[in-house]
Amino acid sequence: MRQKGMAKSRAVYVCQNCGAASWRWQGRCDSCGEWNSLVEESGAAEITRRTARGRVFELEGLGGEGQAAPRIATGIDEFDRVTGGGFVPGSVLLLGGEPGIGKSTLLIQACAALARRGARVVYISGEEAVAQVRLRAARLNLADAPVELAAATQVEDILATCAMGKRAALIVIDSIQTMHTSMAESAPGTVTQVRASAQALLRYAKTTGATIVLVGHVTKDGQVAGPRVVEHMVDAVLSFEGDGAHHFRMLRASKNRFGATGEIGVFEMTGLGLAEVANPSALFLAGRDAGAPGAAVVASLEGQRPLLIEIQALVAPTSLGTPRRAVVGFEQNRLSMILAVLEAHGGLKLGMHDVYLNVAGGFRADEPAADLAAAAALVSSLTGAVLPPDMFFFGEIGLSGAVRPVIHPGMRLSEAGKLGFHHAVVPQSQQISDDARGAGVTIRPCADVGALVASIARMSNREKTVARGRSPAL
Ligand code: TYD
Ligand code: MG
View (cartoon, protein in one colour):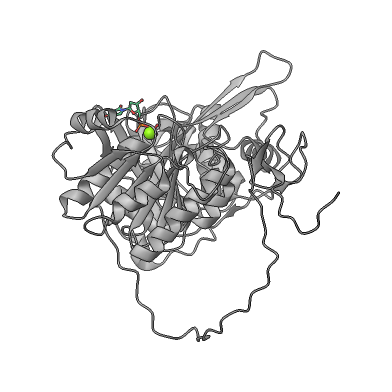
């Protein structure tokens, strides 16, 4: 016989990719479309039907008193830049990155730097044994830093331990996927566990004012594995990127409730851990062969940080029926568009040529401002004209062939000027204030791709005399 009102624990199937719950098992998640991602979790989505009377609270205006968030800087400038000037007490950050990229290394270095400044810092490793973490610290010459270390995975135990003694300024949880809490019944590693653990840690941060950094693994397509929900819960999402062939690593903020996103911090992985790279342009331009055709430098912008990057092109007659177009560090579609515009408005014939475009140093040039430099590199390779080594470009190319203005020309000009670049090829319609003009940089306005092609062709004829001269238009 059926009993009404009896509480029954019904199985719930939770998508391990997006966290959506479903009452029955399905091969494909309705919510995110992932296959085979549903896992049975008991008691995951119990909703109480009790109605409760709410308590009345006071509503306030926007213009009330507020305090600027105080900051705890680690002293590692490249790290502090990305967080917006240091950790905000009571905030929770998620640091994502592929395995082996250096998340644990970065965080143990940040922990040591902060602990040496007298703050209480707790590092909880859910993946490595204490001895392993110690070994790494010894290798990094950080063994003397007063970081409090433990290998643990039970959230309640961790919070009880942290609550003992002085208030912790920073707690690192490496990683959130290894944590489990008694608040949730499902197995460790499931979305429900990860979400409940993150919630408990979040509550602890808000009530005690400790900053908590959660390490998160990412899947092959670059998303923090399992719970996308954790990204929505935390105050800031940082990602640590780099590629296997190069030693440099980049830290970016894709979400930050207390600062700007788009800022990057650049590090180099050395035998002694991660070293800060204060001048990344020098790194990306290192080993440049300035005497060869097919290379152009773009003054690009990452967040508020100008970066000079070399774009290399190789245009060669094809031996295949269909010419090859290959890119590294550049968008394939943007290259196709630039090639089409160069053919339609620059008079170039590229249909029988293979085209390769490479961004030096393993960097990605995603900004439209890199269009003009990419076009210049392509024309230079095709014509064999060597661009002057101290020339740089910025400008977006439109389908009409026009070169369009980009944001922050002043920052680009001053960074290039500092690094010894004296000839700027910029969009003709770009407004440049007088103080941005200084710094010994000659401005060469360029109206469209036709003008670009003509001037590079002139350069190949008259060699360097034109390049050194002061022509008002490029
Ligand atoms: P790690 O911080 O363990 O990566 P994650 O936590 O993101 O998985 O870094 C592991 C890699 O970094 C490892 O392959 C070796 C390299 N490494 C160095 O090159 N130099 C060093 O000083 C350290 C500590 C690591
Ligand atoms: Mg690690």
